Image (cartoon, rainbow, N blue to C red):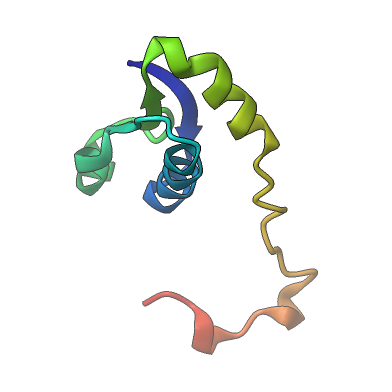
Length: 87
């Protein structure tokens, strides 16, 4: 298995996984079970979407075509709603 995508989080990894599986490419998410240990592990490169080496070129092309858009960022503090803040 060869990494085709370094995911920011599990949701990100599963979005890519579903896109690849829809194309018939088998997928393994490396590091999926490690996300509960965030305080003890490095923050980057922990979750990777992996595919068989023979499928890597096709998987890489699919991943490059994915468009998740830009993250939503408040223009200023006036847009911040404390009711939506995580607890």
